[in-house]
Length: 289
Image (cartoon, rainbow, N blue to C red; front, top):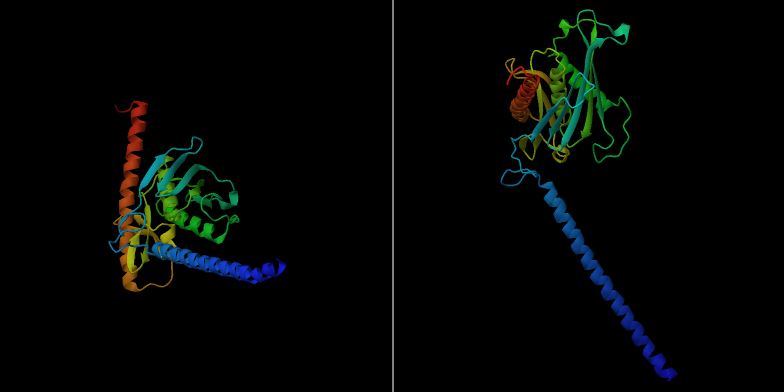
């Protein structure tokens, strides 16, 4: 019996070895199938513009994301507004005009305008801690402040200070544009006189196609051109900023014109929101019925 058992042992070991090899082969095939499936999913994600000219969120190349505005969201601020640009949400508050806090910064012929721009830690998928006053936030604050300074009638309020505080609550591309638009509405809500209601929109160049108001996914593969427009001053440009690799002159002109058209579309939404807010305020006060 022991001899018979010893005779069967080599066969059983060879069977076990063959079974293990078969399982390894099947595992390898399934792994190749899963890898090929992952590659197909990535290929689909990279197809940001379909052959029909639609982007992944269903918009065409020349369409702006949905814009909603809520005015007067903060009771203790002189002016405030919450603006949603697609999935991007921004809160802006304005304090002033008030007495200058630092006498050394006092301007005798006009009001001093300060701007604080920050990104909430939960605003995006990045869990990187941003230092206060880093390069990106500083540049964004400067862009917004310069656009506002060109429109606020600061000479009517000399020796005063106006503080603009902006918080990005959710970021999905276009944060600077949404921040400037929200700040402009908050300025108007505070009753500060302005020359024009500046509006801002961005545009990009993706897969040889100019696109309007790119989101975060599209910006990871595209350049970005920010344009701040004064629609009631012969469509003069308040600010232009490009954060992108090199583009040809023809492509830049196409992207610029697309961004200007986006500014006009957003300006109409902002104007309607202000008019509706004023009508509600006058009705509530009994001025009009």
